[in-house]
View 1 (cartoon, rainbow, N blue to C red):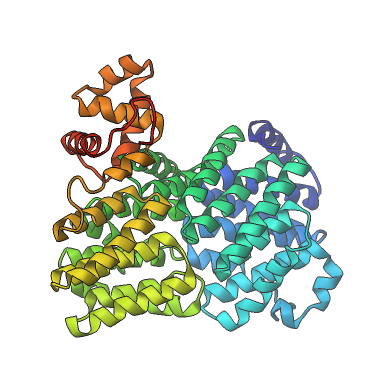
View 2 (cartoon, rainbow, N blue to C red; view 1 turned 180 degrees about the vertical axis):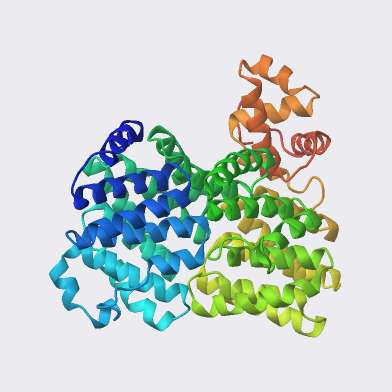
Length: 519
C-alpha cells in the first residue's frame, strides 16, 4: 500500500517469531521487495534468495516470484553472474517454457508469466536470442488480457527486453491503470518507470519526462528512494537534449547519491550518460568523451551490462570530435551485434551514423544517407535530426552548401519539433556559418514564445536583470530564470546580448504587440 515505514517493524517482529517456513518465507519476500525499492539492492538480493528457499517446498509459485525478484535486484546492481545464477532453471524443469507448457498450465496464469519471464530473461542474457524470443513474447502476449498489475508489469518489462516499445507502452499504461484500480500504490511508480523508459527508447523525450515527473512524486510519497533514483535518471536524460544543464545536474546529483549508497549500477550508468550527452549537445566533446569512455570502454568501471551499449553512439560521436578514433573500434564491433539483435529500434541507424563518422570521404556520404533511410524506418525525431545535423556539418566542410543547407534545415526542424533546444542551437550555428540564416533571419522564432516568455525576453533585451524583471512582472526570480532558459532554448541564443539583438531585429522587421506572443 506504499507504507514501507509501517511494514518494516512488522517484518522485524516476524523474523524473530517461531513461524513455519512458508510464513517466514513470505515475510522475507516482502522484506526483499521493500529493500529492492528502498534500500541496498545487494541486501534485497539475499533476502529474496532466502525467501525462495523457504517458500519452495510449500509455495512454489511464490518461490518463483521471489527468485525472479532476486534477479531484478542483481540486474539493478549490475551483477550479471548473480542475475544468471538467480535465473538458473530447476533441475527437473530445465526446458524453455514454450517447449514444456504442461507445468505452466497447472501452475496458473501468474506462475506462467513468472516462469516464462525467467526462462526468456536468462536466455537473453546468455545471448541465446532464439531461445528468448518465444517465452518473452508469450509474456507480452499474456499482457493483452491480464488485469493484474504484477502480470502487466512483467509484460512491459519483457517488451522492453525485446525492444518492442509500443508493447511496453501498452503494458505500462495498463499496469498503471490496474495498480490504481486495485489500490496497489507501491506499484504505481514502477509502472510509470516502465512507461517513461519506453517513451525514452522511442525518442519521445517530452512524454518520458511527463511520466518520470509523476513517477518521482509518487515514488517519494511511497518511500521508494531507489525507484525515485530511476525516475531522476530518466529526467536527466530527457533534460539533456534541452538547454537546461542545471536541471540535468540537479537530477544527476540526486540519482547518483542514491545509486552510490544502494548499489544501483543501472541508475548510475543512465545518470552519467545524461551528463555526457548534455556536454556533447553543448559543444564539449572532450568532456563527453572522457565521461563516456569510462562507461563504454572495457574495464572494471564499465557501465551496467544491459545499458552501456545505449551510450555507444554518443561516445563514438564525442570521440571522433575529440580525435580519439581508435578507441571506437572495439565498442563498435559489440554495438553491431546489439543492433543486429533488434532490441533497440534506433540502433541500426545509429550504427550506420557511427560508421559514417569514421569513414573516409568517399564512403561517408553514402553511409549518412543509409543511416537516414534507417531512421525513416524506425521513426523518432531526435536521433534522425542528430544524423541530419552531422551529415549537414560534413557536407558544409566539403563545400557542398546547397546540400548542407537542406540537411541542416531538416535537422533544425526535427530538433524544434522534439524540443531539443541545445541541439537546435548547433543547427542554427551551422546554418549561420553557411550564410543561410542571418542573425535576424530567424526572428519568426519569437512567435513561438508564450506571452510570459515574450515579456521576459523584451525586458532582458532592454538590459534588465532577472531580479528587475521579477519585480516588474510580480513573479519570483526563479520563475524568470526558468522562462529565460526556455527562451534561450527556443531561439537558439547563448547570451543576453544575442537575445537583445534578435528582439531588436524582430521588432524592426515586423511590429509585435506589446502584450501578445504573436505579431
